[in-house]
Amino acid sequence: MVVLAGSSTTAAPLLLHILLPLTSGEKSPEIDVSGMVGTLLLTQLIPLSIGIVVRQCRPDLADRLRKPAKRLAAILNVAVLGLIIVVDFHLLASVRAIGVEGMVILVIAALVAGWLLGGPGGDKRKAMAFSTDMRNVSASLVIVTANFPRTPAVTAVLAYALFQTVALAILAAAWGRWTGSTNGSAAASGVTSSPSPPTRR
Image: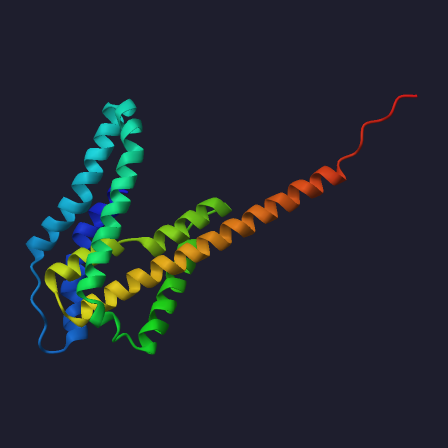
């Protein structure tokens, strides 16, 4: 996670600097690179580093804080996402069908890439697939709202964040039910096929 957060801090400004001139034509928007890096450090790398230090130095304290921290993170994520939806709802209504098709393709491509690069083992592949698809949505929201407020870029990132969250939640639930039913069927077949103990005469 530290490697991923650190790479996001350096890769995001670099990729924007390279790709924006290719996609925006002659008038490339200006990017506050220092502000972007500072925001990513403040919202991703520093909190993650503090958590790792606390986990290593005070594991008992980390165990006590884990559940409250997860709840607080969930509340803050929902609050920020809800605020962006309320402020920029008129932009979301302008998403066209081709944009939805692009989001579907991107979600599927990220899942497939994570699955193929997940290495051996079904659990590792599943974790890699979902992690690849969920990476850097929060960082994208931070970047786009800070550097491109009230532009179509906010619409694209917000629409994809909502679509991705709903799609992955449905897929995870369906995957979990399918895995549970498969394991249950395998366990039931193992019980029925096991030889019965010999009876005494």
